[in-house]
Image (cartoon, rainbow, N blue to C red):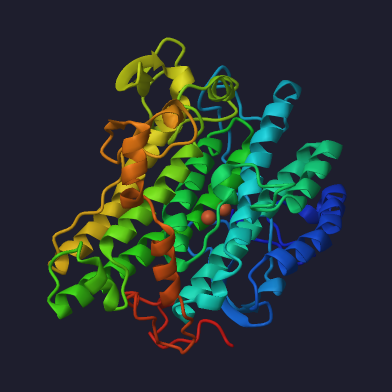
Length: 480
Ligand SMILES: [Fe+2]
Ligand SMILES: [Fe+2]
């Protein structure tokens, strides 16, 4: 059994899909490879391409002990094609084809739909690498620098994962899409990335931690939905990606936790009780809690927009076609077809926010978003525990889903983080209390000076509880 999941490092492209015997696809990927390396060198992490980094590389697709840690220069990272092991006799978990055997090939009628989903997922992976490429210059420690690069190489691998599916199952148009994935660029005016949040800047490390907390978690939910796909190679690919994705959210959630820990420790030591005494808190060289809340508000709401419209025929069609499932579809106890079910959706009715029962099929984006919000709360709870432990009276909240939206039901109204509908004038007056201002950004920026000494940390962030791969506190995660 083990040999089936083990990664073959003998071919130019490491894989556990037997590429050695699949010459056509191996050739296509080898042809795509130089363009990928060009992209990595010009759009990937800036300034550290020649430094050995202590990174994990996947050695098998088994849940236990799949990764091996070692020093590697990022351009030499062995980006590979890894699928979770094939489940014997897997049946389709939802939709019109519920109960039928999973597909090993793409059915003609769903080809366009599947290709579109794979391309949209694929587009987000290199986008985040592009967004984060300047952060190495201001890393608060070698530990954090290494974590950034681990996330970056794995997002690169996720691009490979999607490109493999395109090259193997979608012929000429798959090849064209694979090239387009290297042509679009985050924030580029002529050829931007496909989704809004992936064209925003990630200007500082607090943004990076918020991005990996909230936007990588959106990625997790989308992957979870694809992991239920009737198209088995897609389901297996995304299942393995989810194993890597867990680390990205760990980096985000513990990153913010270390920031609030440092802030509240410094406040306590200086005898500052009022979290809104912003000037005095900032004078300590730490980021005040209200600014951290504003950053959370921004990244959470940009990520909510990624779920699309609350009511969506696209989502209904994909589910009906069995191409995409719900979060943990295989653990839900219902008919998995949803043709006569309803689901409560928060809607904007005559300018008011109301819960409305809606056909469950067209509310699937909303349902996934509800699962997402619940998942986000785990991180928020951790942050609040840390604040409380340090004796400061403040609670970070998740804003109401109607707040600061650009897509869906609430994009046409203005609402406060508590969910009160506001006039345009009220919004204008209050928005700088709720979203980061230029001055907030400038202050955070002023703290972003690099710390590259092993075991040392910038003054605005606490050290982690534990090292990566159980390494000691002064471990040299990146050799400069
Ligand atoms: Fe990813
Ligand atoms: Fe990620």
